[in-house]
Structure formats: structure tokens, C-alpha cells
Length: 574
Image (cartoon, rainbow, N blue to C red; front, side, top):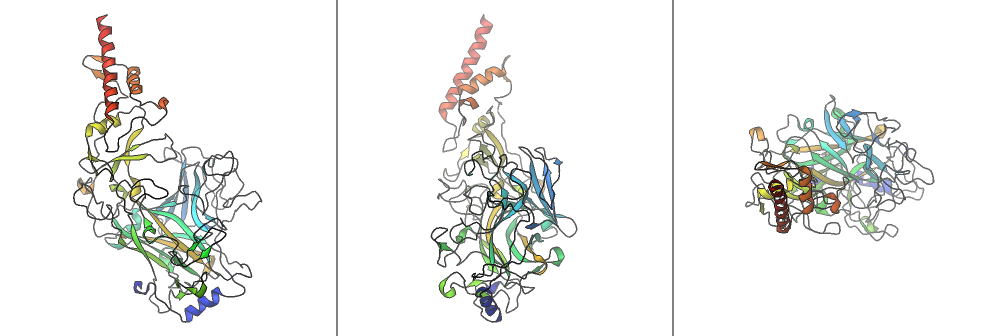
């Protein structure tokens, strides 16, 4: 792979081809679109089928190598999904779905998921075209998750995600945290027999059609932003990833540069393609669409500084965690992946590159990768697999199953610790046990899945003449040479130890005091006295900023216990 030619300027036969492609009187551009789009006057952008009926968007994502499965809240398979029509079986709250991407021999290479019903519906991926509300020069088309808007974000009065008369779909321009990204869980088959370096390709195939564009148009390529996360469920540490665009799948896959079609099929990182001004007053100024350190990042809530969306530093670091990313070319041919004039700016500068590959390079400095040396469990090291995700205590601060609980403490292998802003203090085990004793279940132990999930940003450009009417986006996990288990997984074969949680007396169970037994109703009484009941408005007992339980709550708890014991004593005396 010719990585050295990244950013080169090449005007030759290929360059002339691009010039003629972009600046012609009758321009053409291919289109990826759903086959069952709703085109009625009252339809939302991104609508498919009949509003309010069980019909998902289909036709853009090619499902020939995909099995779409519906599951109930217990994980049991039920019902069916019609890949041709998009019609699926009735779903209810807690039901979910997964789309399994298969390899040549039927092995499952990846699992693609979206939000559970009613926030999302099968098959996890849809196509949106013609969203003019995007900003900063981002494409008006996208490959995006199959989610729907909440009551807070929707334009309709009875909005409740899919549980609405006319659900409003999430589109390219939808606001922050509307679940635009679909998740690609890369599975063990994608790294089977790989000790180091490139794994096996995960092939997402899309249908594309030639289409005549406006006769006055000058741009002969149509751009699609891809909203996705790639998640490490391979069972191995990874040092990065690659995305390659081409045709065919499995053993027949060829990159766009290898088949000589990178002029009508290539990838972009949005460099030099940005604009200023509002969506209807865009001025293309040669800026970048995406910030250079936000092309491949882990959760900003874990790693990142305050910004317009986050009011505090990330739990583990104020620095962004992730990777630098570059564009490249698979073919080494001299005329492959040529540079071409920027069609959106005066003078055609900065020049763009018809690359068929993007790939991660160095890891960004953070407590994910960088050596800290003084805190047990940090850094995490190379990209963690799911079997090694760290354990943590979470607080459900709003009692809303559709929102993520707040991360309060994490297990470093020997101790529970607080956050970066707090200096990662050790939290006494007895305090963690009191949280576990919360009778309303506001606190619970779980795993920090977001350390597995890498949000990646890139653009696909398509033009007329792609052979066979399909193209393939190939995702490749890159296996790290370093497979050292983290500090909390030092058992046999890197197995992880279960953190101590709830070792002390559980408040919701019967409490024994010497020869006496306190009833469960009395437990509810002192639980209510210290503010742990849902009737008190939600929120309950919280950890203070230094990771310690508020001493006032402990005092109230002791007073409540004394009251109960005194009633027991008085009843015996009488």
C-alpha cells in the first residue's frame, strides 16, 4: 500500500479526468438511496414505507451478506424482518435487533446494532439524501443509524420515538445525542489466526444507481457522511483500524484504486472541504469539515475537555483519546488515487485526493494510551477488547431507561477510584458497599463499554459508472503486538476478577440484629429517612465530588437505625 503518496499533487491523465468530470455542462452523479422512501407531501426527510407502520428503510444497504434478527428483552429470537420490503414483526419496549455481517464461509464477522425499540428499528442502517439543514459544508447525504427523535427534539406533538402516529426519523442534521451513529461490533472471526497487523475485512455493501443531476450542476460526485462507531469485540487488543472502499466482497474484494475507479468512488476526511456561514449562506473557504483530533475518538464523556456539549472534563482525562487518521491509496500505480481541483473553491485549492483508504496512525496522548505511572490501572494501553472492559459503579440520576447513567467510580484492579478531576482518589470499600445497599437500585455496578467504542468520521463520494451497481466499505481491525491484560484481569489466560461490590449488609434484605429481626417495612422506613426512595423526587443518595458519601446522610442513617432498635427494645420491655 502506497502510504507515502498521501497528500501528493498529481495532475496527469487522471487529473484531467477529474477536471472534465467536475466541470461539464451536463453533470452526472450516482446515488445511494432507500428503495421504499416515503415521498408524500407530509413526509419527513428519511421517512420510509407508511408512517406509523412497521416498515424500516431498505434498499440502500445491501443485505445479501447480512442476517437481521429480532430479539426480546431476554435475548430470545422472535418474529422476522423482510429484507425486500422492510416490514418487520411487532416490537415492544425492551425488544432489540442485530444485523449479523457474514464472511465467505458464513462466519459472523461483525454485529451491527442501533438503539433498542422504540428509539430505533431494524436493520440499524439507513440512507438519508437531500438534508439541506447541515452546516460547515458537511454532505447533505449520509449513511446513518435507524433511530427516531425524542419528544424533546421532534416537531410533532405526540412524539415518542417509534411509539407515535408519525415518528420523525433522525437525519444528517439532527442535533447532538440523537443516536445518529450505528455500532459495528467487530467480532473474533475478524482477527482469527492474526497475531499482529491487519485482520480480516468486514464488508458493508451498498447499492448505487447512476443518475442525471441538474443540467447546471458542476459537481459530478455525490458525498455521503458516514455516522458510525467501530467497537472492539474481537477478543484482542487493537492498535487501530482501516477503512477501504472498493467493489466485491470476501475473497473477491478489490479496492477502488486497484480496479481503476477511484475517480468515481473514493473516501475523504473532509480536509479542505469545509465552509463557513449558515446552511443557506455557505461560503466554502478551504477549511476542514472535521477537526483533526476528532476523526477517531473514544467517548468525550470519558476523555475530553468541556465544550458546548459537555460542562466538565471527561471522567478519565480532559484530553481526547483516540487516533490520528490519514488518507492513503491501496494501489501503488503511479496514476492511482490522483489529486484533483477542489470544485467548491475559487482556484480549486486546496487540492483534494481520490483516496480509497483511510487508516489510523499514532494514538492520541491521553490516559487511555499514554503512560501515567502513578495510578494503578492507567493507562489502559492499546485499544481494549470487550473481555477486558473495566468495571464501574453507575448512578441513575434521572430514572430514565433511555439515558445513560452517570459514572461514579471505577475499579483499578485493587481499589475503587474516583475521577480525573478528583485526582483518581481511592474510595473506601465500605462506602461502595453502602451504595450497593441502595434499596431503589439507583446505584449499580456495570462495565464501561465506551472504552471499546471508537467514533469514526469519514465521507464516501460516488459517481456514475460503478461496476455492478454496488460498492463495498471494508472495515479492518488492526491487531496489536501487545496483548498484555489490564491490571484488573490478572487471572488465568487474562481472566478478570469480579470487583467487591455489596459485601456489606444489603438494605433491601432482612437485617439481623443480635437475636432480633427488623422487618422489611422498617427497612423501607429508614431508607426513606435517608432519601433513598423514588417518592422523594428521584436522585437519592449521591457521591460528593471527592467520591465520598455525604456525612450528613450517614448521620441520618445512624439515627434511623437507632430509632428502629429503640422501638424493638420498647416492644420487648412492654
